[in-house]
Length: 174
Image (tube, rainbow, N blue to C red; front, side):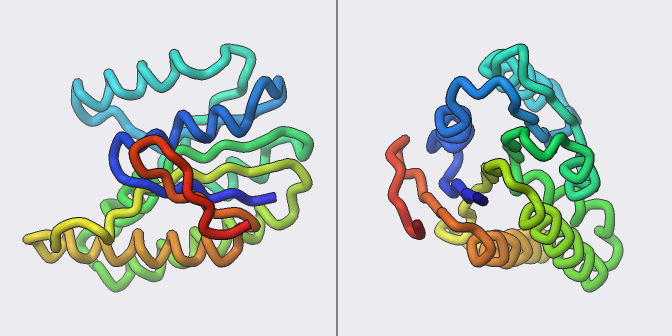
């Protein structure tokens, strides 16, 4: 079963994914964040401390589908987060935004294919950025649109979609 957990910044998405995974011992946590600055390094350390030490952690900025393909089929998978994953793909194609869009679509389609072959639950964490202000730069607007499309693709493939607002889950699809 694929569950997509959406929400704004600091809405409790990651914590919700950890709660849904429960005390399951066979969890693979796929982390897409990269520590480009001290703040992000600190955030990564805080997220690591929240997870049980027995869980497998796989740090992969772009080829998430390949990482998931290598995880034991019986393991619950948490992918945290789609937001940074799409950003990583976009920035790897920043000089050609048309190719960035094709790359994001291809990566998301590949991930969905891999997830549909799994029998254990998958929890995807992503920000909903389309409810905020319109970004002032072309790159920002392109990113917002790419993430919105990726979230829509993943929501269509998911059996369950939740939107977290102020730490409270609203079920959008079940």
